[in-house]
Length: 130
Image (cartoon, one colour):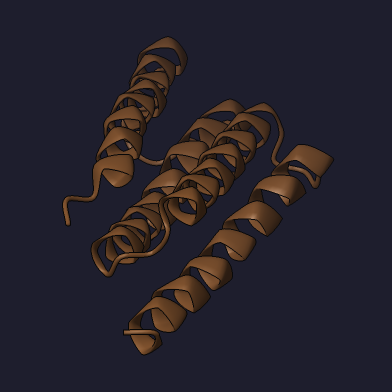
């Protein structure tokens, strides 16, 4: 089975990652920081928003694709994709605004964790039902 929902989400995530990458590049030029964050909190925010996305999104896409390919119900796959999408967008938006603790960032972390656990359960239960 072709993971169509995952393909759409991967396409969106590819564009979103490009936006996060461009924010880092623009920040480097604007703030004259060529390596690391240069001790600049604005660069730290941009780098962490980009870095966290690259740390979490790939595994999320892999898990979503596996759920689709093992035959998880389409509605479940779509619901899981929405949870991952909202979680990653919320986290990146919040982290790019503040390095401190904030509700949006926490929501992004919680939604991503829920996605990971729910998707793992969905994969295993779908496999066991076959």
